[in-house]
Image (tube, rainbow, N blue to C red; front, side, top):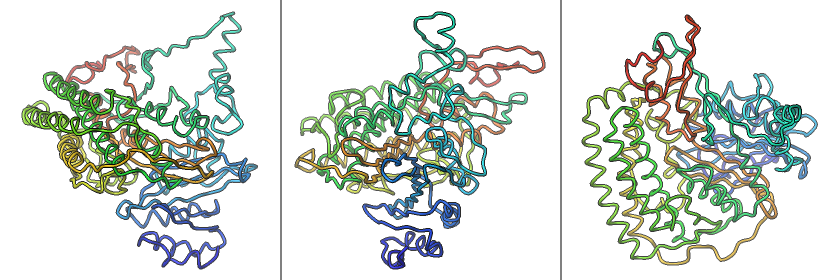
Length: 566
């Protein structure tokens, strides 16, 4: 590496200068450092990845935001890994780019240095066949009967190819019995009507949880692969369907990643409209969650009132976008729908009414003794664990980790408004609930400011051009926490599109939160991270002593002293 290129004085932030000064000793293993649009990309040899990761770990307040694996054999004859570390206080991303030769795609694990890398490594092993040395690797995303050696996100496989390979054992059996078609319906912990089932295996003694194992990815939708065959402005419609609650978050994050990669200017009015819709989406999501939480606690009156108030927000979203959900207004370079002054006036009136009604609901709900008793002191997640796992959103802020992408990596119109980031230190279910309650009021306050400051002008960039193989990062503070999209541009569509939702980052904390918890507190504790998957409606309990097996509805399981496992 050219020593001048590694001169710490050339870099814009204190932490980046410190990072560069610490890696200069690896001169011949550092192949270049680029700095652009808040992203510092450091190209390193795979041999020094653990050492550099160790240096980042001991610096503190540098978090692994995501890791992206990419098949770039057709470009440079290599696979690549992009480790994206965030320096929140300096609004900067540090990307370690690691090239792996196609004949030997392997690299040392960093999971012993950074626990948040665990799922990323397992996923890269499944989807690209990358080997991570000195750790146990196992099927993580792909089903157990998936053919060995077939890694879906490699470029040689098309979507039709992969569809033919899906469930090969089921196809083989169907041929044996002469079936003309196959419909596989998962029964048991996987509900046939749900598109994102999950499974928590609880190990209990009496009614206390002693360990938890999570199994997910039963239905992998292949969205990233589909995006590789779509035009840039088609992808937002797909991105918005990643999540049924916070879809606009995903389409915004994708658009911002492309805009970051290609230096596309987004008109200020469009930025304001994006922030407005994002905060409306946050309010409706939090009201939904608060209602569900009250339902799990047996306070159905609070549940119904929370959803009644939420309905006004859904109607407001329809007024401003034309749809109650999946708004379809995001495009690369801006939005496709404007907001006029009459709608702004109506929106402000709705917000005032919602604010008043929500305040009354909270004043009543938090004074219900049974509600507070079930929330306080349950599902505890220590600050140290939140930091170690790089947690995000209300889950992190409820444990005292002060992180919020709107403030730490400003985007859209957030730099034009003032707001408080609610943080609680207790780390229990009550703390995570109060974070969301406070955020509803903060979002309403932000919306007042945004409506008041909407500037005139266009809502969409007139034109923009593509430069292939540029890296872009887009992140948005979803109701559940940070969503981050990474795009490597192609000539006509994304060459590589990586999506990391907040639940992916937060789920590894659930076993910690459930340790030594009462069985009755499991549903609420799992719900406290606001997980984005379709929940199962039953649990299976095996009584080792008697050998009996029975199914238990979730609503029975959540009752204190229900004797459900007897």
